[in-house]
Image: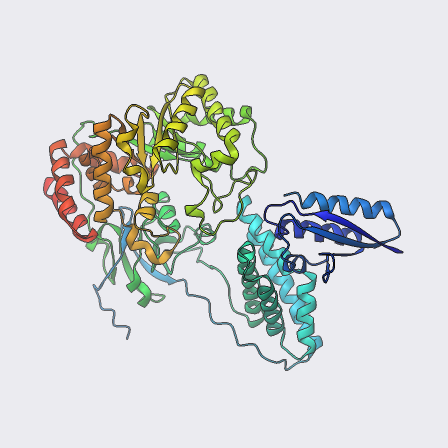
Length: 89
Length: 543
């Protein structure tokens, strides 16, 4: 098991709001992995809760770090790519 | 004793022409939830109760979603997602461990998240959603009912503060009359009752004293509810004597769907005065192709009553969002980017809509007029007219809803063919009274002198500029008000399909000279009540 740390950019004009937060949580739960998201250098939120993600109050234009615990690097890359897609607005 | 005596009159604003007598069914505001309390049965038992309550609320939301249309179903789906949030449960679980009851633990957890999300306008709606699910879970645990539970059998007049779209969607056939304490003549409740021909009196604050089992007369023509009265005491609508004459001005119909177009045809409307097109897009997740739009429009144009069909280009905004147009949340959606203002971001959408209408027009051979909503300046009106004329063989016009455009009608001489007054929005902007705020209903009464005098100005300036003027707001569905509109010089009116017959009868019974005199003299009154009473008395004398 290793931890992958990748960046995503929030392009959605309303920031990380309910819809993308919900999509991320659904994806993370389906993967069964431990995923956390946050601003670099700040406290991260567990991505199994849309409320925790929304409470980060992330706005458009911010860059976020996604951390994923998995031994499968390809899977981590795939998850981050999908999260990036959710944040396109 | 509540102090209500037989025959006592409770004043409000009437909706519709028919009266009804029936038993009151009071839709009570929800019973108060218990205060947060410590558990008496231990954390484990509370955890079981909380899980069961969440499951039960979740199942109830599923039922509500299944019973509603796509847009409302999404709302319930979003509530469910918050309800079942992992962290929300974790935080509540922490409070259970501290000895709180299940209801208190969930309520406290929601309050913490509401606090975290608070102060950010992007999350205002989510905070409301959180409070809503908190209320549902706490009510479930306390055995308190949430939401509307209406009788399915019998005949009842339902009485409540005001009714939301979710509420009116649940009106059963047992609902034969409606009274609201708040909400005005253009409220959602009023529009639904008018279209379903349910007698209603809105903005009736005194109805707060009514309780289950009271017998009341709902007397919309008299703008009143009468306690313990007979149907024979209802105010009779003015009997307009059928003359066989043509109405003073054409009576068109408002439509939003194929079904409406058919109803308008059977009602004998003279064309369509307002075709609301946004309803065709609100449930699409992607923009329909020009071919698909053309097919839809052609079908509706073919079914529309004989005469011109006035089509309004899309009137959406952040409170009435079209899923495939990106519409960010706005603080004041009614004052925001809506109607024609969408052209800045979505020009191609409006071009496609006009192109589809042109194809449908050519295909059906119908006379199509197009107009843009939310026009505030002459420049916008000219821009729209030029765009529409470059795309199709339309008569082109604008909606008059903003006070600013009322002052620029003369500037539009020779540039637009017609204008149509949306009195609902014109009232909202003229009186600075939010249509969605149930406490402001009386300001939106069309008999307000401020509105009537503004309509007089619109009619006379349109006449001078050679622009044909019409009215398509709810006010044109009231036969007496329609006489005033014709008398003021409006060239057409457009009513909901259910009111076309009544409005036509009124406009063919009254002579032009009488309508003009009444419309002139009604402007002398300084209150809505006096203005309406004067017109009704004059029409009574004539009939």
